[in-house]
Length: 530
Image 1 (spheres, rainbow, N blue to C red):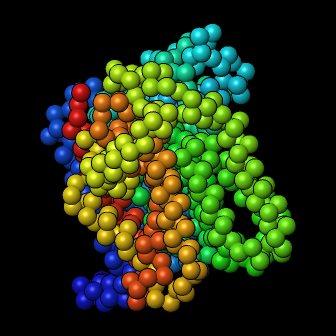
Image 2: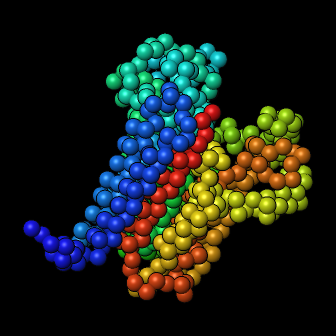
Image 3: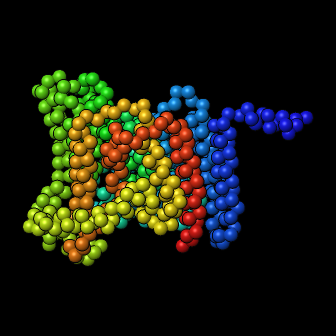
């Protein structure tokens, strides 16, 4: 018979890391058990019979996911951040996918409809109606479009996941689709197409689109972390922000933008600070990356300026440098003219009378208007940053998720913990060498400023009524693609350094944070029953 003293002696032999991990897993399990046991007190209608098994399933998966993350952090001798991100991104992204129900991500219905258009081409169906609306199956029309996360959405999707399609008829949707780079919807379209081939219903189709988008984008961010010679923790932190995971686990093309922006940043840094010579294939890769990124949103085109961080000497001679620059720049220009030519033409030629802002019911600003009133542009931009700058920063991190829904707002305590975690990741270790050459940070700041300016200006002419004194429509998530650059400018090569490498501990802490946060968000969504 084993005595209490023998049990205690055995417990003392457990490594401190595993002991802490077991304790955290126990707390996580307890939190989900408490949440599940409290469902009866919410007074959910009897027809919401799928909520409890859903909560139990999410709770079990949360503990298992946390256990897998702890196992890699504690056992793996050759620990690497890109492998850790692959594990964290997939497990935590899957949890975001179900805790934040389909169509709750910003503009997800429009993104899903656009991906469905590509799926129509793949399966040989009519893509759009005669008047330009995307053709969808009848199930989409009967589904919950423009969903706001609430208990009803949980019930609807959870009871319909992996159900068979009962509607064969194709009908026009209410969407013409996003007029953007259709390649950015290929991952989602492949998932939707697979669900259609399997004859699965609307709930399953939108779920499969999310799954494929998450798989590709997590792989892209993981590859970026592997490629970049320094600042790996910065990439990891940005890739694991609540807002980032929310976008990667949705049908949004923001996953494509975030993935390719990180890959482009990482490859430029690799060529600038690690690789001794730029080869022809490196130029081709840069051209492909910027050609696949910039057409999605014109505002991210200035990121191409990172190529100027690469010393000319690495090209061998000035002629080869100029040819390489022409190839990369040419790829950007050609792709933007093909995809965004009409938009660029509208920006430069439209009169105020041509730009009617429908949501405001009045005329909007245009490019030609500011040519005639140049002083008003800096005034309205500075006024917007003064009023909304902090909101942009908070929502970029994930203070409010979904379509900035109040029931998906992170509490002050959770947000403070998030800020501490992110800053801890951004601070380099004392043994990390300084890498930036003179003027590099200044140039990176200029590129960030150009992206911010173009983002605000695009929403100024596309979404802002001419009577408004501030720019409307700008959201913090628009700045995620350049957040790694901003973090490098602020934290790399400075006097603020960490005394030792705590990568494993910080990664585990970030994972624990997400599990606890998702428990809270799940409860907040359940409180909304209408």
